[in-house]
Length: 462
Ligand code: PEP
Ligand code: CO
Image 1: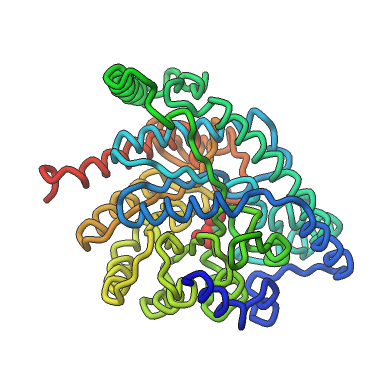
Image 2 (image 1 turned 135 degrees about the horizontal axis):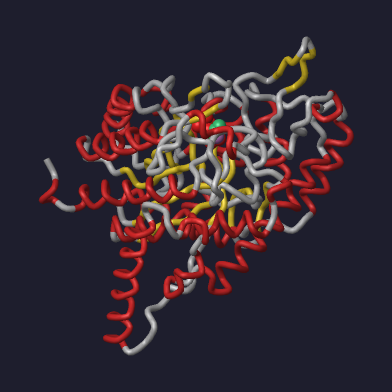
């Protein structure tokens, strides 16, 4: 009866296309509406990438995380690219997320929900929708499903056929990751599968190995006592997420399913609304409010407590557990001012959400050579403050959100190897935001694990 009442209310005013009558932030200018509609019809007919069963499971897990019984680890590229849809790149990305999850499990003694920023993270908001070079102004690069990086009118004009290419690349990505995960690659008995050769000598390798050894010991101990394998350790669940920026695309992937009420976005388990598109009366909030998926919203320094409460009311009117995740991203210098009033407002209103911290997007800087970078110390400082602020407010920080890669890139400054501005040009590959490299990601996970151990042990409080 509960689901029936939800769906009746939603259906009265909402449809997968009702966003089209709202104000659209970050619009995409398709010059040929006929081709766009033909592509959308084709996308809608294709088999889905994920199922409502998985989506329902994830919502339950996220509800656990909001109660402090699980922890959300969400990470991947700022933006995926078709060129990097290769077995090596995908496996590296999976390895780093698996290794981080082991560290976090060890730190918080909770199950970790693994969510990749991939298999669909192809559409980007930009601070400027146009770019000018030598007097020529063209649309900015908006991600591989919208236009191309090259700076010519043909490459920068949004092309709807890229949406189909994106769907295919997402399917290939998901197929490979799922096969690895389900085939045994993610088995906690075999963490050696995830070793990345080039980091054997990294400063964190030893601490990580020691943790893995202790976990392996615990597993062996339990299996010896029980005289059988500990269930589920070889069956890691993996979920996907992306920013639902291009509502044409998201609309085409929105379906009803047999035996369940409501509408599901079957292109990803866990879509999110970006900080630039979260206007409460805007098109994105309108589209997202009608989905059955668990959803997230990124919130930056400009949000007010009242706006946040409006957003929560609009996106989770029935207060469903696990439905809404708020990913805060203020920057190391601003979190102390921005976060406490929001936590207080949400608590006063008696709302239950899952809080997650993205320590990446509030900490962007431009180097003197014009490269976008982030300082490792700022990322860490924002995270550490986030844990402390939530703890002091008796709130729960139930997740973290990172931009990272399993490769040895040099895009963020600092970390155990002390990368400097001068190192950045050595291996700077991102077309959009700078990512933590493998070692930096490991180090962050180790620090987060320490914060969580401190949080859960009363002796170390105060
Ligand atoms: C992102 O996640 O890449 C992004 C653009 O984030 P935000 O919306 O928080 O700026
Ligand atoms: Co980004």
